[in-house]
Image (cartoon, rainbow, N blue to C red; front, side):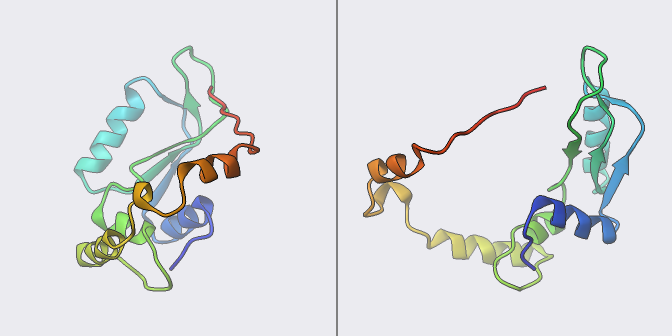
Length: 129
């Protein structure tokens, strides 16, 4: 299944009980890392921390997502091509084999100058909390 957005993928994972929402305040300093480490060690679900507390003690305006690709199954589910449902390492290997046939961008007939001119008018803004 191809997902239209990260939000759609997260909704799918939540319906499959492969995503947990953490609503309690959790510090981004060591505490969140420890929780994420334990989830990975247990092949646990992805975690969306909705009430992240920054190092200065203030609440972050952005949620934090961890362990999204913490299992082979979720990586395979997230790397979709077409309508095939992927869940196993074999499925993931199949995607890798397909991607191996893509041409190297540096060797493509279109030069980098064309790409640079195509994106030069796009304004990108970064927001950091």
